[in-house]
Length: 289
Image 1 (tube, one colour):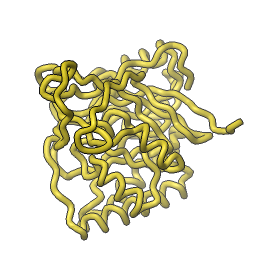
Image 2 (cartoon, helix red, strand yellow):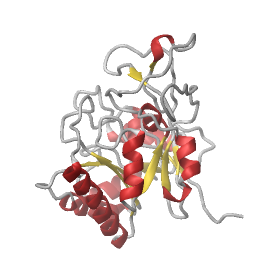
Image 3 (cartoon, one colour):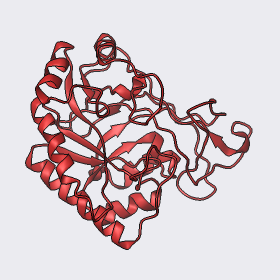
Image 4 (cartoon, helix red, strand yellow):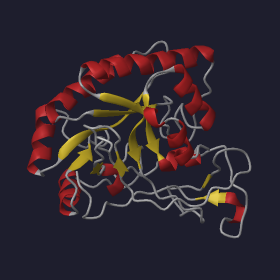
């Protein structure tokens, strides 16, 4: 029998709390944390910068008052530019982790642009810098007792299958298996987990619906998985996540606005090959932290 302990947690993004400017009304921390505890969650990701108090002590106190443990959080970092050292930002985040007991640093390779609508194209120097920074952050986090994972994410520098593969081959960092963002980027998350189970340390579970997208801020995206022309059926999964390490937990995140260059074939269930963005839903009471 495996000694791996799977744990389930929530994340503020499942309540619409998002780092994207102008995303919409942002619920206050007390309401979000209260509702997390009320539905049976015992742990949470920390949410975007500014959602919880910036002081490590105040952050830890707020979580404790709501009887929630911190597991880490989603941290966008600029990794591909030679004129920016992301380690300074990482050290500040790790200080908060030390105060709250968080143990999973969920990174994304920030494009350097606002939101997730566009991103630059990396040259070889950019790739070398990004991969080297991933390994540097992985090592520094480990020194603090924290597991760093990279979150492939639409609109970031690591979005599609080719880019995920380049990270796997060019660095030693573990991955966050986000079922929604991987699908939109053209990667079958189940196949990825089968191919490199030893590199998956954290999971964001999403609900992907290939029907017409809602109007407004959440835009229609194009989707395919596993290769050109392959149709991927809707993934119906709880909006939460499970860690695959003995001391880890995980959390659900809703996806953020952006576009993908991939497209599914048209079908009666999927006219025009369009897909709605994945969304997270709160975990049921049977979940444990």
